[in-house]
Length: 276
Image (tube, rainbow, N blue to C red; front, side):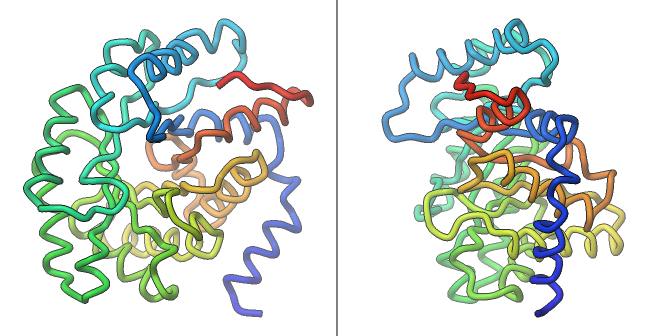
């Protein structure tokens, strides 16, 4: 059994250590509450934001999610509807999820989202260039989006399910970090496999190495297929055991999920809760 498989097994064997109410509440506070459906509407996003606004009236002992993540055309809807402090407006941009378009279009979409109030922008690594080994073009795309999102949090999605092995994940992670990413993110959730513990361990190892070399802390966001409290606990455990307690904050650890919030609350309450 190699080192990564051993680490995954050890976390699963000791998962009860992380399945506590304190850890799960922390995970909830690190969640980018996400709605990325083709059927999303302005009224639907408004209702979702309304639930966030009213959340602590019903669950006063729970933290709010870190952000609400939507398509870029809903950035203004979220920003204008949010009433509670401390919750960011996050968008997916750059022609998410395929990143298959002209660079000018990707940059324009990202810039318009920021102008409409986005605090955070998640883009997808240009796999068309990366898989063709045109790494300079890949870097240039991230830098171009970084320029128009300056002052906002930029997350770069590696789409690890499309990368052949750990070495390719590592290469993509360093490319994104060196090109200006504030976070590296596993997946769009639109293809399989999405987030995996294997990819998470490789990415967190890269973040650790990058910090040791540069002194710059990069955030980690597992996303795609994270639907249960146990899923969240596994990725929290990976971050804690590789990166340390400094990363256990919404500023450096996020979960991209549309269903995990309800599962976390249900696990803590020991009853089925469907709020979001």
